[in-house]
Image 1 (cartoon, one colour):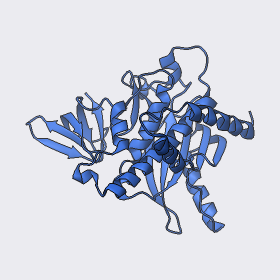
Image 2 (cartoon, rainbow, N blue to C red):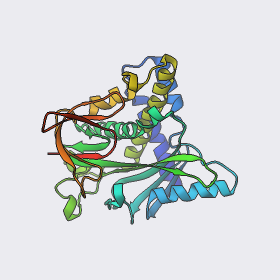
Image 3 (cartoon, rainbow, N blue to C red):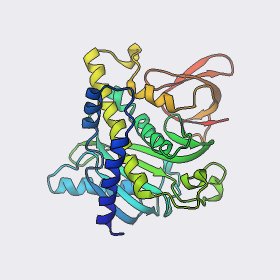
Length: 306
């Protein structure tokens, strides 16, 4: 299939999933506002059969646009069938062969800091909701790992970069294991895919999967901006105990509270301590009870379930 045909099919699938989007429990006016805020998602999509990294291509596009005295459009997506040098946090390798969904999206840094902090939660929610569209009980591990039956099915990398002109962008990398069922030895016990979990002989339609993800990203990012609007109107912040709509929706999909975890900034190289997760605070912090009975709240870092 040519890139132009592929992108047209993705557009068609976007409309299908937009018509089916679960917007409960929001009013029609709120839904209209949320979708309007998120409308730039996927407005421009660039497809490649192979790339080293989608994020590298986004950075190149940012520079090319600035050289032409233009601004890269919000929601620009780079999509690749396979990645040859993909990486996650701390340059960890990410297995991205043909059969998965691999993309990156550029989003301008226009949120107030309190809401910017919740951007990774929004992207995780979108990915989790996408997987659940296939009838799987996907759950979010703080902050945004998507797990099915305890195994990682989707991963997200959020980074921030400043363009040569000084514009600030969030670069959002997403990988969803679709039809790829063979993993490197170090991932075989911890990774899974849609096709494996569905136990089906037919391949998952990656065009359909992409369309669904883009619609869910539009909803999640729109909800984050709508949340910002509501917070500013109320004059309340998470530090004052305001519970965001986005974080409330995220918690409905998460199984982290109640888990005994190991915490660290770089958990693979330097785990710091074990604790019991008691709650997620209104700002997205992980509130944990230590072995000595004390509590600690972390706003960055990562965990593994014990």
